[in-house]
Length: 388
Ligand code: NZQ
Ligand code: ZN
Image 1: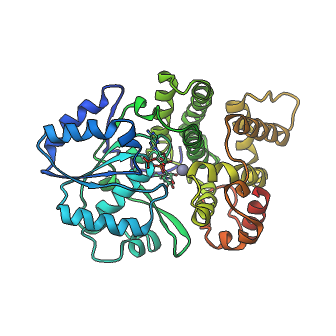
Image 2: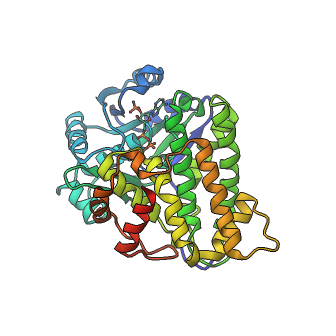
Image 3: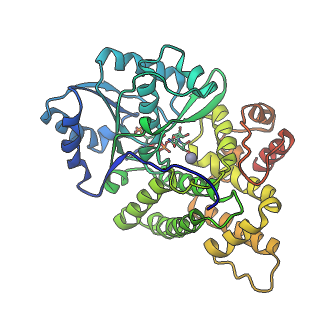
């Protein structure tokens, strides 16, 4: 570990089949007015909405609703949420849903008392929060983003064709998050698989950076092995509680800021995926899956030793008698075969991208410099073409 860092994670997690009972412990800490934020209605169909509303009522809360948060929440919806939170004089924002709902709740929380246009301030200028924040609590129903225990909030501006994430500080992390793996059982397979790849991508974005001997890399290899093992079980039997609970816990640890410590981190797969989503509104994990292999095959020579280590320690490639390049390529081949097997989308054309959109997607791509190669726009064009 060669970096200097501070580590603090203030989110209190309640995990397991009885986790929702703990909402009774948390609610008395906040005022009467609760803004209940949720998505397109899955929580009404699977009964989670009724359970949560029952607990809110039993605790004497005034419930104000803000439903209809869409996957890839938009800047227009954010404006609506700010107005609802103001009208409710919300003391707590309770997000019940996946990463989109949790991200949106955080964006509303930092925007209600903000004097400027929040899109410009937080997502274009990346300014810090300098106003009062409404506390956020999360009840997670979709696994993948890690939003339940981090300061990330990703918002899409459809007019500007930009999808941008702001990683806020500890003061914006959820105050508490409730994780019951059974709440994820009703997820369609497409979403489950997409979430599994989102987790893998979060780990790889942090793993593929740096050359020092870093404990975080060993932790990440363990998380990846556990993820692959549990994903294989969950895909065969989505109701396997043990596998689904492991996947839920790995998702949290993949992006709750622990394993990034001492790492420069890459995040270029996410920048490419977010640019694709800005033009297609496609499902987050699938956008990452569709660009990953062309990206990793492109940067492999620049991070060769790490790609070879990944192949051996995560994909069990036998190294003896092979060059680092052969080992690394076999690792990516194994990853690609597994991604195909679990049903990930492997081409951006399947997400609605055509060749004539590539130039515009390149323009929407933010370039990061923490990985093994800082891309030029020509390289981004070539990776996107190889992803078609
Ligand atoms: O809207 P409803 O009806 O609830 O349906 C949702 C939605 O259609 C459905 N769903 C969720 N839980 C369900 C369920 N359906 C049945 N049963 C359940 N239990 O799943 C669909 C997708 O939900 P969404 O919240 O959009 O998925 P996800 O958790 O993948 O979140 C994606 C968003 O998070 C951002 C992404 O960019 C994207 O905008 N990210 C946030 C990050 C962070 N905060 O750190 C990091 C990630 O890299 C990511 O960028
Ligand atoms: Zn992600």
